[in-house]
Image 1 (tube, rainbow, N blue to C red):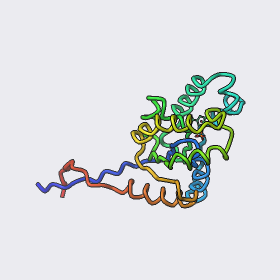
Image 2: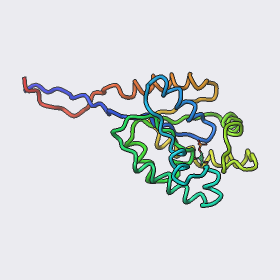
Image 3: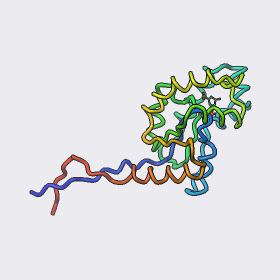
Image 4: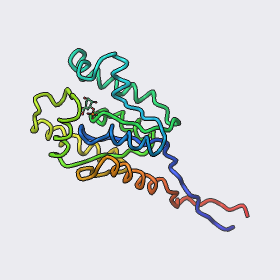
Length: 193
Ligand code: S3P
């Protein structure tokens, strides 16, 4: 009987953006939304609305641990079948359980960049509780700790250092398309003909 090889399509549903503060996840998420006509799910926004507080207020009043627990809870409640652009907070990779939760949602794209660029961007976009005092050394330390975690969880990595948000969005779409292309599986299936 002839043997064929079946094609395996990972059929990833969503695009999940991870990366350090200042990587441009929210802005790139908006660019992707315009191009893909998909909803954007901002995990930080959902957490903030649950507490009816800003992220800084949550950190100040409830502490980082409670923020992390709420962040994981939001993630647990996202359905893998709902296609969206999912924008995460920079520290989401700190939760061990979050790794699998994120990867089951779709293609995980790590927006990376050089430390100086990320720090500069993070300072001028938004009020971040972990960036109090604009401490570059502290930022580098956080980046060093998280780098291997981003690398471990991501399916794809994009260096955003010299790219505009639109260019990053275009690069993501091209890489995701290649990533989702059917691949030959080494699992043989028996042909019926
Ligand atoms: C955090 C990043 C923030 C937000 C919170 C914690 C982090 O999101 O979730 O302040 O630990 O890096 P952005 O990555 O969008 O800044």
